[in-house]
Image 1 (cartoon, rainbow, N blue to C red):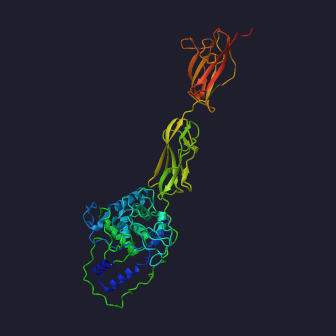
Image 2: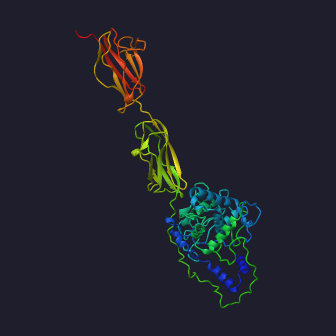
Image 3: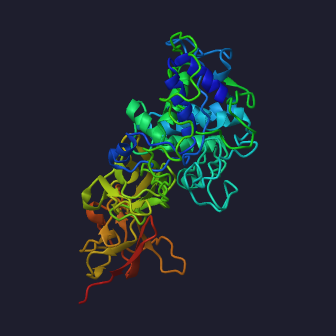
Length: 563
């Protein structure tokens, strides 16, 4: 790295003082870098608390800059062939992870506008694209990628937070994996990017998605230069880090291509495959925009051994303007952003006309981090050709989720119209999440049939009964119109059958009929036709039965009047 840095410096520097200053800055960069002036303002933006601690704990990173010749001319197509600068080649699995993370963020946090090239730039700086793509088929690094112990000796002081589970160090934390998360940050922001049920900082899919969510915290819009700069500075509080990431970001935006896993280009300052990332960033006086060559300048005369204006070659332990090296111990709080809407145990939605539904729609709102989301507004709506309504006669109501992320819709009361309809639950504005439930109302079915009066029914032989029989079919006391009723004159045998003597109805032709099929009218009331008596005296039975099985027997007496 030193030789490469010196080469760039000699091409761009014009004075020995500049060269010496750069050397001093290179040495000073081994300590945690000062935060960007905008970093403080970022923490208060958007009404939320963005990440306050760097994701990497100011751990070291690679400082190689992209080639001065870009993969393609500015403005040309980004659909490049696999030829071109080797630095533009990104290992297949690593590139797939970056693009998958961009797609996920586009669906769950579209307002962030995360470009995959930003993840690629950070991945290049943090791990050299996961050590040139040395990952297995699932995207997990073939060997651990660990930063140095964050013990306060040239880096931040972060005591162990994971018991060595991720970094193998039970005393101090170390940055872990392709995107170099410190364990305490991973505990909050870790993601399952490849759907294997695990959140592994050593997996490029998990790490890329976690980095994307971290960069999008605080309602940032990464299409804005200021928000993008603040996002990168939240990842590592260093202006040199920002400059390096920005250079690779611009480089990849101008073109890149896929190369097989394991064939990516390692940074010039890479050590062993399993060691820590390289030292902290070095400032560069050369151009930071890919494709821009420095003005030709002859090599400067070597500086004197001890020039009076040369900054000290031994840097101070801490830069004069550097903030305290110990970051807060509390991990950053992720933003509460709606990720999904789930069914929280809603049962079958069915009811009889006029009755309340026994079940109520219940849903759960989840954040983009997979945690229950409180205070999320959920709108429930009755949709379809139905007169069913929520309490108060409303077809739409909005309710807020509780601390566990769940919310239950008000009670639904069925109208008189039978049939199916839908109930929807919707949350979110940028990209609403909607659940749909099918509900149904069944018509009332009479469970009782009874006379509306109790007067005895008698007639002399050969005459008609003076009083008409009137009945009412009801369901739980409410009259049921259009209920089918069968009226039959029956025998008194143990197994009743239609009687062939005694009282009878008259058919359309005037002949005796002892069985009729009838239907109730409004409010379930039915007045039977006139009943006639033949010449056989006695006590007879009229039976009325509904389709649902409700039964009524009526006594009919045929007797001669008293003298």
